[in-house]
Image 1 (spheres, rainbow, N blue to C red):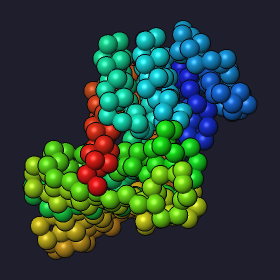
Image 2 (image 1 turned 90 degrees about the vertical axis):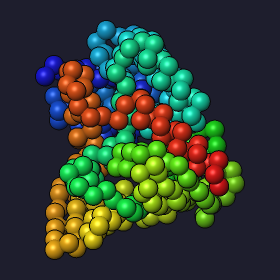
Image 3 (image 1 turned 30 degrees about the horizontal axis):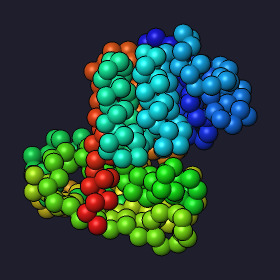
Amino acid sequence: MQKYRIGFIGCGEIAHMHAACLLDNGALIAGGYDFNEAAARQLADRFGGKAFADPEQLCQDRDVDAVYICTRHDSHVQYVTMAARNGKAIFCEKPLAMNAEAAAEAVEAVEKYGVPCVLGFNHRYSPGIAKLKQYLLEHQEQAQILHFQFVTAPFLKSWAGLQEQGGGVLVCLGSHVLDLVHYLAPSEVVQLQSMAVGLRLPSPYLEDAFGAVMTNEAGQFITVQAHDLGNRDFSTDPAHRINTVQAFIGDEAVVARPSQFEVWGGGRNVSERYRTDVLHAWGYQELNKRFLQRLSGENIDVPDVYAGWHAAKMVEKCRNNR
């Protein structure tokens, strides 16, 4: 595989996680840009490359093959458009945009310039979720009921919880969990009711917990719950048993967690365990590997720009059906 050279716009914690995975999978780090110059220098010192003076310079650099966008949510469309205009392949952290209209602008830019664009929906590739996806595809009966629970350590008392910058729990966590809903139960949602509440954050922060109930064209009944009221171990120990997807198929109950997969009933009792380090358990390694494979021309499943647009539309549907 070609050694692709990756540049980062946004050089914080998530950029470091992706950079580590990219190096593990044979890529090179060309460097990064961050409005905090020290963060850009730190990324370059740790992983290679240089600190860029501005994002346009990075996108125009001939030594950069692909751009990773790891910035504040309200800037994603701007940088997707900038990278696409300069002919760079794109990896954009979720969400694609703050709303469906802005997401459509990103789709238009990607289509206009004909560049690959992959979204950071890493939880698709947690080992337990990947096993559940395979199980659902191979099973003759579809799941009748699915429940999704997504919990993180507290982080919304920051720009992530603000209306104009992060979007609160619906945008931050909703985009992840609603992408998983579409990934595992891809039929179009026909009925949806949601609720979002602020349990601990003062104004001007948005809600920190939400839930939704929906049915789709396949007749599946789906419930969703997401919040950031976990403890800090939830961001350092992905082997915990809190984040789950439950699927009820005939007389079988299937439970997938980042590092676990279990089946009970129907004469079966399956229990599998997988690696528990963050990069593998939360799917970062697999998603970054797939991004590089897509750059090499392999026709491999990845969450593309349309998945990002779909998630934005689902977040909006939740917002409008409360």
